[in-house]
Image (cartoon, rainbow, N blue to C red; front, top):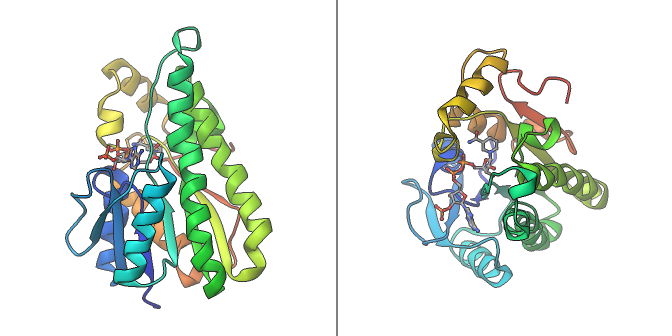
Length: 236
Ligand code: NDP
């Protein structure tokens, strides 16, 4: 295994934290961003970084580069929801989610690609959602942003694929985190009925897929969408 420098955005809790923990356990040099600049897992460097602010992301990368070396694996994980039905959705509800979940990813990969191009190596992993492909009532903003990540990964693959850089999407289904705990119980029960695995997913199950797609074993896989959803989105 080659030891890499890995940066995970939003690595202080939930899926991002589990991904960072997995990379630490595997022996990589790991950094996470959090908005507070605190709270990453043990063994990882936590740096302040808000994906809605390009200067903050630039500073976060510069600090990681100075302390751990050029970022070779970037996991764009930070994300928010502002769920409500279309007629009640304000323009701010829409643009805030797009700014964090889509434009935020653009800011992160743009900064990351500089070092990756120089190194002629990179692994870009974008955390999307089954909702981006399957749709979900009350999540027009979120689904639009998450679907957009597929376009980003595939365009990045076409732009930078010949330079040793891969870009893939991991699309989790319903994973037990703060984000899903906030959903009404009736919504959770509704989801559960449609998941072939008959259960919700765990954060470590997403982390295992990210670890693999970022590994040397996955060098010839790019522009792919990898579901981690217990079969929920099958075929989408
Ligand atoms: P959580 O709400 O538990 O964590 C979200 C993370 O994103 C936090 O670390 C949060 O930081 C960070 N974040 C939010 N906004 C920003 C910002 N502007 N700048 C930097 N960091 C930010 O979510 P999950 O762990 O559940 O979700 C992680 C990712 O996985 C998201 O992209 C989500 O859309 C996606 N996902 C989750 C699913 C699930 O079922 N849980 C299913 C499919 C996809 P802070 O602590 O500062 O708020």
